Length: 178
Image (tube, rainbow, N blue to C red; front, side, top):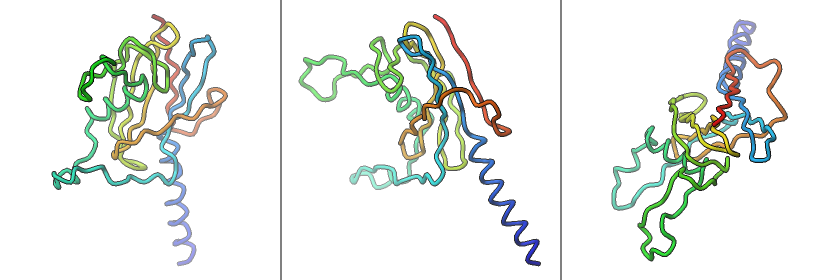
């Protein structure tokens, strides 16, 4: 009896560890100076989803979660930055360029387009957004994880591609020269 309980607990712990590593992505981005930077992107263990910001005048908004479209906008803004359309415009609601021709954001990218968006439910609900944009003079593929509450998971710089990745870990080494 004790042995079967221990076996069950061990398999639960092992399967949750495999699930965590199965959602990792390692990819390379060529920087403006020509150096190649590898990143590992995954939801860190212990991450929880917080309450989504709500408007007190709209109580039903507390039931809303991040949509795929909102995750894409969040990802592009984070990856390439947000630039106010006209700095001389005194109104706070003037246009904003998102992923346009001026490099910015985490990747210092410009001309960003979303290639795909996948909704994942484990280890917590999130969107994996794959984008292509111009970094350092060439088109490249890069990623963002947007949690269901709107937060971004920052990629972790790593020294290079892992030589032996656990089963199911995705490695992307895409370089689009433009």
